[in-house]
Length: 289
Image (tube, rainbow, N blue to C red):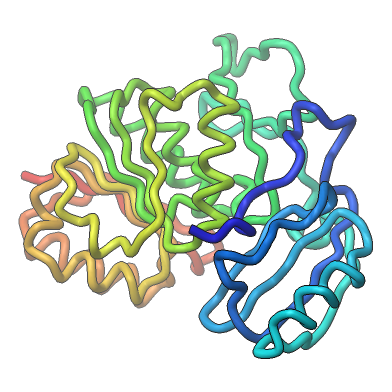
């Protein structure tokens, strides 16, 4: 397990957004697990194929130079300085979707009502992982989950490509007692673990690093997958995939959604509902006949 793949200071202990400024160092090569961790300004290490992105809350050229000197196989490509909102692509602030009030822990406030009912509050610290809940696929998945839990009692679920853990959190707060949250990227899993702890759901959600294909046989009533189509294809191509009862599938473009829908119907899955945004992003809700 990579020691660098962790989040830094607990945001509940910080004053305001702990990620207001980001200093990003883009390296060619993967950081060795035995590499010592950085200081308090270190936020996390996002590893993608044979590249590493080191995130800091303050300038850290000296620390990075130390890593490069002791690891000659690593090369510094570029370094960036940007605001946290620039990295996320939008301002990270509280928002509502369905019955949920999703709020960064550094902006938590009193209980809120949505359409006359007390909202279900989710504390969500996105860290530097994409998935602050504002993307249309995330919102549509939450809407799909509300439909599922209004129609059936879901005891177990698996969330593929969990990212920040937002969909696993939503499923748990809607009543699911056992959820397996999977992501290939360790920094995403670390971020999800932080959010699970923030919401006091450690006894209901287990986050683990790995390939979705390796966990498809996990027994569950519900599968949630907001992931790349190439991974989705491998999942729906497995007979074990159809042992589930409910399916919330997203992250799909138009032609991809058509292909997935065809496969689901061919395998005895009824499409209960579907969502699309601007004709680009598609989400499917299916149920086994």
